[in-house]
Every structure is written in structure tokens, then in C-alpha cells.
View 1: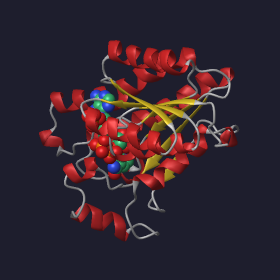
View 2: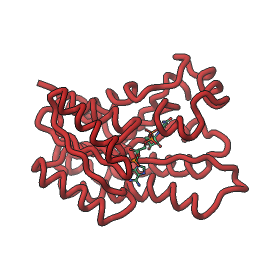
View 3: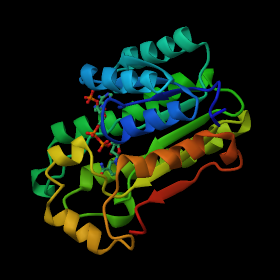
View 4: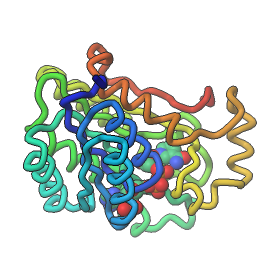
Amino acid sequence: MGKLQDKVAIVTGASKGIGAGIARRLAGDGASVVVNYASSKAGADKVVADIEAAGGKAVAVGADVSNKAEVDALIKTAIDTYGRLDIVVNNSGVYQFAKIEETTEELYRKIFDINVLGLLLVAGAAAPHLGKGGSIINIGSAVTRVVPAESAIYSGTKGAVDAITGVLSRELGPRGIRVNSVNPGMIETEGTHTAGFIGSELQTAMESQTPLGRIGKAEDIAPIVAFLASDDAGWVTGELILSTGGLR
Ligand code: NAP
């Protein structure tokens, strides 16, 4: 029996990248998983098919996390489908670096709306359904420690995520709900390929400062999330776990 047997999880932004890896891992540990996507239905359907082929349970549900009506429908679908909710992984996120002189209101609103407002809407809609033993895991980023140049908006969103994790751990702790962050360093994903980070000087610089000598994979992050989702982490809340191969 898996350590997440009988639990129900929502993973936002699970159509690809880190989120897809987390969804596969939580399902492999026995959870029924709601695989959220924004635009990549085919990607989410593939994650669900892989989970089902491995004997797990999952459903793909489209929702833009920055849209309250769509978030409310996402949570309702989880409850209607599986009857309960135990684990929420706030993974959806976008990153686009820009020099401070090239920072625009549009870019600010786009990145903050998805990375911060989206997390708040999902946590707020999910909280009434979470009970004792519930776990919220926010995917932050090591950028709040590494502070790379030209990342002011993105690093600003992840600074907000660090703070929100602490706040929600205090707010929901009395109800037995734990809230933690996993803060990865650079991970090879569809997103980091599209952003041009893979194969860039930034990757080389990151690797040269990383004790374990490489950037990460989604499979490096998923087991940490699975631990925080499980009752094994029952005494862990309000923590930010830097997941970087030692880069700090
Ligand atoms: P990715 O490959 O670009 O995947 C992003 C995911 O977020 C996709 O599933 C995408 O869905 C979803 N998404 C985007 N906008 C959304 C919206 N409005 N509503 C719902 N879902 C939305 O990204 P990744 O590299 O795996 O990153 C995942 C998370 O890890 C992000 O929060 C990121 O900030 C964080 N992180 C990444 C790294 C890294 O180096 N990769 C490092 C530290 C932290 P669709 O494809 O359906 O649009």
C-alpha cells in the first residue's frame, strides 16, 4: 500500500514539467490525482494515461488558476470526482526574465496573476475542503536565495510565495493543515527549454556553483513533494525546502 493511499491530490500546472512529475509520483504513491492544465489538454491527457497505465487514478481538468470561477470549478470537480481533498500542490507558474528598464505593467500583471494570485485563489478555494492531515505544497524557487539579475518580477513572485507559505502555515495549522514550500534550483523542463535557459550561460553558471554539479530533473523534486504530502511529514509545516543539489 502506497503512503498516499486513499488521499486525493490536486496538482496545478501538471500537463508538463515539474507538475507532471509530481502528479505521476503522487499517483504512484497511491493518491488519486487531479491533473490541472491551462492550455495543454493533450499534455494533461498523456499524464493521466500514463498514471492509469501504471494502475493509478487520475483525471485531467482545465482551469486558469488566475481566474476565480475556473478555480472554483476545478476544486468542485475534484470533490465531485473523488469525494474529498487532502493534498494541494500549487505548481502552476510562469517565468520570463527582463531587465528592469524593460519591465512593463503587462509582464508584472501576467506573472504575478499566475504565480501569486493563482496560488491564493487555489489555496482559498481548497481550504474549506481540507481537514486534519491536509497538506498544501507551494512550488517556490531558489531564486529568492540566488537572486539572479533580470529576474525582479519573477523573483518578486517567489518571494511572495515564501511569505504566503509562512502565513498559511500559521493560519491553517490550528485546523491540522500543513503548508510548506519546495524551492527548486534550475530544472530541465519544457518551460526552461522554451525560456532558452537550457544550454545557456546561466545553466553553466548554476552548475559551476552547485555541489552536486548538475541542474535538476522533475524526478528530483517529486519525491520531496510526496514526502511533504504524506503523514511522514506530519510534524513539518511552514518550511521552505531548498531543492537545488546544494546551490544556495
Ligand atoms: P513549465 O514546464 O513551463 O510548465 C508550467 C505549467 O504551468 C504547465 O502545466 C502550464 O499549463 C501551467 N500553467 C501556466 N499558466 C497557467 C495558468 N494560468 N493556470 C494553470 N496552469 C498554468 O514550468 P516548470 O519549469 O515545470 O515550472 C513549474 C513550477 O516550478 C513553476 O511555478 C516555476 O516557477 C517553478 N520552478 C521552476 C524551475 C525550473 O527551473 N524549471 C525552478 C524553480 C521553480 P499549460 O501547459 O496547460 O499551459
